[in-house]
Amino acid sequence: MPIDPTSFAALCAVALVAGCMDAIAGGGGLLTVPALIFAGLDPRAVLATNKLQGSFGTASATSAFARAGHLPLGSWPFALAAAAGSVVGALTLDHVPQRAVSVALPFVLLGVALYFALSPRFSDAGRHHLLSRPAFLATVVPLVGFYDGVFGPGAGSFYMAGLVAVLGFGVLRATAHTKLCNLASNLAGLATLALGGHVIWALGLAMGLAQFAGAQVGARLAMRHGARLVKPLIVAISLVLAAKLALTPGHPIHDAIFAVR
Image (cartoon, rainbow, N blue to C red; front, side, top):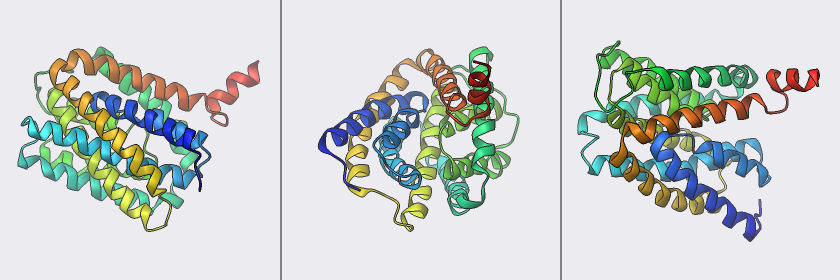
C-alpha cells in the first residue's frame, strides 16, 4: 500500500527512538506497532513489517554486545531455541486465541514490572539459577519465542525476566542474550510471514536502517550504565505496555472502566 512521504518520514523517526529504547530495555514495539497501525496498515502487514524493521535494531544491538565480548560462541543455542519457537508461533497464528492472549498480557506484564522493581536479584552480578541451562533452552526460550511469533509486544521483557529470575544472569549478560533471542525470533517469524506476502519491504527496510542507528546508541548506553539504567526503564516500559493493552477498546478492563462511567 502507498505511504505518503510525511508518514514515511515519521515512521522512520519513530523507529530511530524505538531502536534506542529496545536495545536498553526492550519495548520498541510499544512505539512502532501503534505507529504502523495509525499509518493504515492491516494487522498482518503491521506484524510482518514490524518484525522486518525490528530485526535491524536487534541485529545492531546484538552485534554491539557481541563485539564487547558479552555474547561468546556458546550463546548461539539461545538463538536456535528462540527461532524454533517463533516459527511454530507464526505458523499457528490463525489458530491461537489472540483475544485470550491480549486479555492475559497486561497482568503478566504487571507481574514482570513488579518483579524487576522489587527483586534484589536484578543487578549487574549473576545469581544462582533455578533451572539448568539445557532445561531453560528447552522450555522458557522457545515458549517466549512462540509468543513473539504469535503476538510480539513484551517479548523482550519476558526473555529478560527468564534470564535473570530463572537462569540467574546479571543484567548486562541478560540484556545481551535478550537481544540475541529477540533477533532470532524476529528473523524466524519474519521469514515465515514473508512467505505470505505480508511485508511492506520499502517501509520496513527504511525503518530498519533507523532502528539500526538507534540501537547502536542504546546498546552503548546499556553497557555503560548497566542495571542503573536498565532496571527503571524495563519497569516503566512493562507498566506502560500493560496500561496500553488494558485500555485498548475491546479489552475487558477498558470496557469495565468505561461501562462504569
